[in-house]
Length: 621
Image (cartoon, rainbow, N blue to C red; front, top):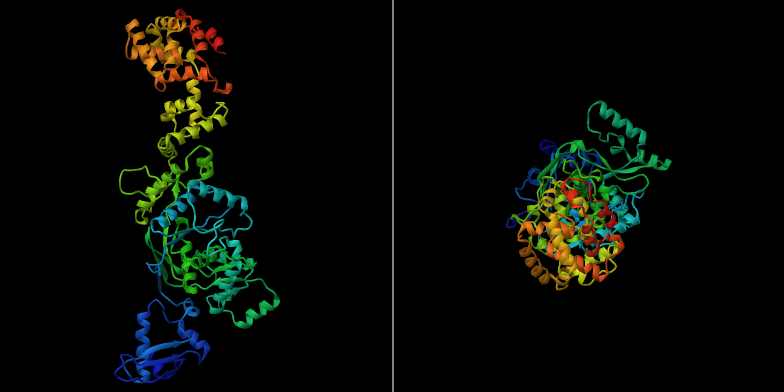
């Protein structure tokens, strides 16, 4: 090249004028606005914008040879800019780093497609963006990516917004809120996409492609036969203006294709995964605008993120391959590059991608199952993140305080529904008691177990049963179990046999006597203190204590071998009969009916392992 320049065959007109020797640089202007157009394009194609230092040295040497002076200030007209950055055979390597100043306010976005319900994976991505923005004092932007016109619906959009609001992930800009960077639906931004597509066409970064679907399929088939990547090999990347104008005159449909170098590689520094690189020869020129005028996803996303001033793109790892195309578009349009962070996928217990076949996977499903939003937020945060301690219980305020992107793992996180249920129970019991009783009381009334949603009975029932409730819906089973009286099943079960053989009939006779005399009912009227006083005296009369006293009493009074505190249970059963708040649907057996069933028992048959409880079951019915 230097020899060629010495011979005066370079394709530029060079203007130079030496300056005073006191100045550190001499000013020379290399004017590219004249000369042979094809030679100019060829020569510029040899330059590498990434290897700028090499260019500076080369041009300096060139100018020295031409002007005969050792120092020059170089200005190239027109500026070495977008038109030539991505020509074929141009660069060997392209390193993409975030070019956003660290002092610029943090702006992140969650951009769901309204084609279905909000998946827990999407909710986790939204949560990480939300926590990062709040922890940095930044903005959380919600953008709806509805370019899939056939599958996108407003119903799905409303469901996604409802689920995000339920989780407590309030957005600073977006649908229903507004903002300075709207509109916030891609379907309403088409004019902007076309504007930037035309800009790329004018600069030479994209070109019109008139290939038919049949031609494109033929290219794929040939690539498969040759075992090559299915990259575009059509003629329109190098077509002349005359060829393009001929097709336009015919009205031939065309797409906009982005020029991609055939050699070299591109690498980014992902905040979670570290350095990630791709070979450019596996990509090929890709479409950014379809023949129907609709923009392609990767083009929309890049334009949206840039024009909305998104500083950090935090998204699922399945979008990592898209970064290659998006980075090239960023560079071509001269947009500052954001930071990228790709979060691992959420896996099923078999370590496959979590899907519907594994059960509930959408936020809406978990809401309907009775999960609390704070429990969902807590659990989703732990899928790939931790604060470095053994602590697993976090409020959203604590998560905002402790969250850092540096502690997000790049390995996949397994979704454990058992642990989620446990965590929901922890958050449920951590609620203020008034809120807990209101939540469960309203649920009991809505399911038809009770006729009231508040009152002394509801308060005492929640206090007694809450430790066995992980989901609000569990409270139905807990209350029904308390009010039921399956004594016939218990006494004839293998587990109940030892209790029967421990002279249970004698305890039953004494208990019936205490009931008939009014002694037991009088004690229950006094509440828990009255019960404790009575049971202590009852044990002394029978010369029983501990398990030999309480197990028989539990079976006879509750009909079960296990359950919550027996004294509190019996007192509550007594109150249930007095308050009249239990609906028939609950299957409640009051104390009066329970003692009638005990009177009908044939203890002799029970001790001989005979089915002697049919008459008792009849009384219960």
